[in-house]
Length: 287
Image (cartoon, rainbow, N blue to C red; front, side, top):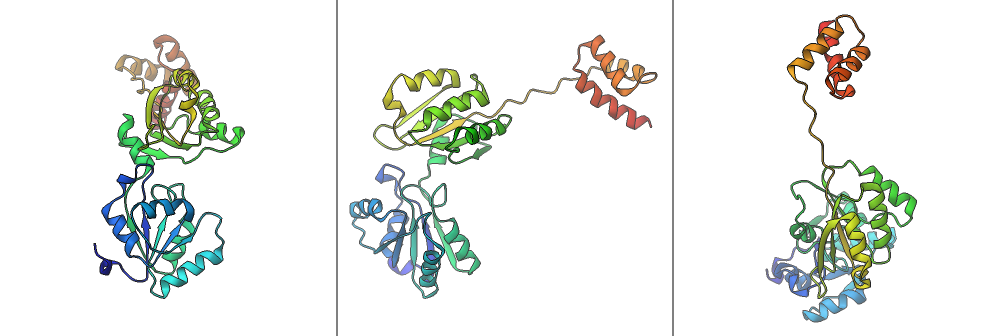
């Protein structure tokens, strides 16, 4: 990509490294060098990245606390033909990072929004965690207060997809404690700490074991965390044998659905709720 490949009147969403500066893409560097303006979450933080790669493009700030006037001012520049690159402190903008309101308004104004893909802590962690990756759900940062955090975890206790959370060092122990209560000690969790950085750590274990492991060393509680929780295991539905089904049918000839299910359960050992559902089906079919 050369500078003349940059589109005027466009908003570029540029992913930057989550740790290791070598992870930035060639395309991202070309865009950052060639746009007219870079909107950064923290210009002081991003200045180090720009200095490292010799990028001299002018920067301005845009973050979650930017007001609507700031959003409109940036969009006005794009309408005038200015090319702007949006970056966050690390990773892909809008993934638990600023940018949603800006992109939403750009779309409403029918402005060109161009994604420049690259590093993201979610996919980085998932690729190396050894957790099922065909179906997963990202839940962002858990609530800061215990009541909301625990309630959130409990609402996800039966979720079968791999769960992914971000967490900060000063709340990692509290979150693991609440996960233990919500998911149980047998649930498998992988802690990914300081991904792509010098002290990168990936460690998986059952929650009750993980609790001990992370408390054994204060260093394990430092840094930025991605937590992956294995989804709940769905128990295979108990089968109803032809013999049990025949017993249930006979019971239904003279008993109510509830009574037939209860008595057949006592005789066969099959769960009453399962027999009740099947008795309902048979009852409706015969009516």
